Image 1 (cartoon, rainbow, N blue to C red):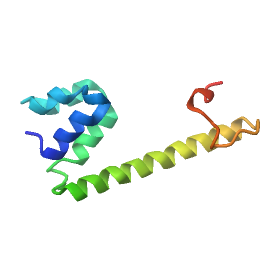
Image 2 (image 1 turned 90 degrees about the vertical axis):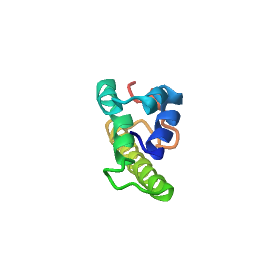
Image 3 (image 1 turned 120 degrees about the vertical axis):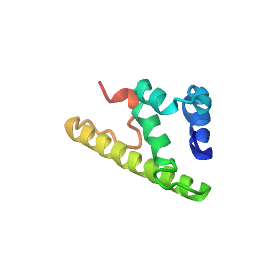
Image 4 (image 1 turned 180 degrees about the horizontal axis):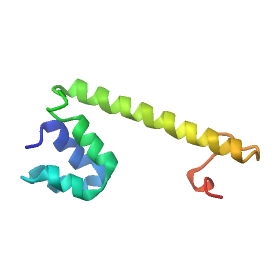
Length: 100
């Protein structure tokens, strides 16, 4: 059975596309079959097995993940700019520009 933090994730992630998993007896298998690594990470990170026991801890864990994702995103943007010396800066670099 999912804990309250995991249920919150299923309802919020991807506009609630996975909300039905909160009521699934086989939710662990169902999550593996989805193939959505980020969703799986969030659900596992907030699990009781991972000792996530309070709302404050759940929020802290998600905030940490956001921070790490932002660092990775910034690193990717900087690496891209090093390959494409055309004067763009990270502030004006848009996602749709990355593959051009």
